[in-house]
Image (cartoon, rainbow, N blue to C red; front, side, top):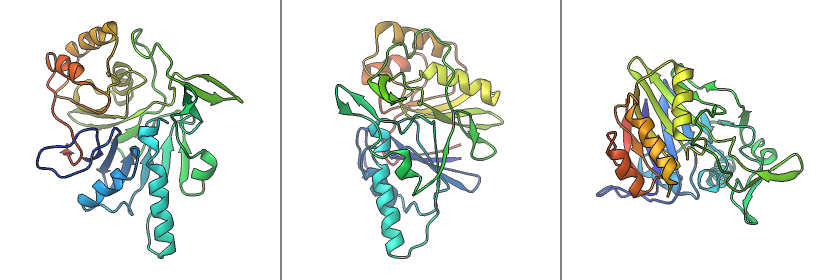
Length: 277
C-alpha cells in the first residue's frame, strides 16, 4: 500500500507543495486508486499534478465526514470531470463512499460548515455508496463505516448542528469514519479528523481487522486544544497500545503532538509526503 499526502496544514522543507487547513490522501493498493478526502479547495489537484497524478484513474473517492475542510474540494473534482467530458478525455467514474449523513446540511452559529454539494447532485457524477457498515475496497483496505463509540472520554460534546428529518439537531458527527489497511504484521489507520474519537477508531479497527499491532496512524486525532481530561485519557490509552509509530497531523496542535511524543514515536507530516507499507 502506498499513500501520498495531497493536502495537509503543513508543508515540508525542500518539498515545494501547497498547504491548507484540510486533509487529502491518495492511496494505492492492489491495483486500485482511492482518493480519501478532498481538502478545502483545489490544492489537492495542484499537489497531485506535482506528484504526476492526474486523478483520471480513481476507483474510489472516500469521504471521512462532512466538514468543509474535507468536502469542499468536491466541486473542483466535479469541475475536472466536466472539463474532461467537454474535451472528450476518458476518465474513470469513481464510486463515492461515505456514511449516509456525510452530505446532510451542517452549520455552526448560522454558518455552513458542511458539504456545499448534496447527495442529489453528487449522484449525477459518482456511483454512490453511502453506508454505515464497513466496506472493503480491496482485500486489505477497508472503509470503517460508523465507528462504535465505547470510550467515556471521547466525543462527549456536539459540534454545530446537522439537518435530519426536517430540522436541525445537535451534531455528534456520527458520519465521522476512517480507513484501515491490514497485512500480516498489523494494521495502518488513516483518519480524517477523528471526531468519533481516535481511541474509539483504534478499538473499532482492531475489532474489525482482528489485528492488535498498530503499524502507523496518519491523520487528524481531534486534539486541537483538547480538554485536560481528554488529552490525559488519550495519553494513557496510547501508553498501553502496541503501536510502532504515528503521523498525527491536521487537527492536532503542537502541544498535543509534544505530549504524544512522550508516549509513542511520532513523525512529521506535510503535503507531498509519501508512505509505503
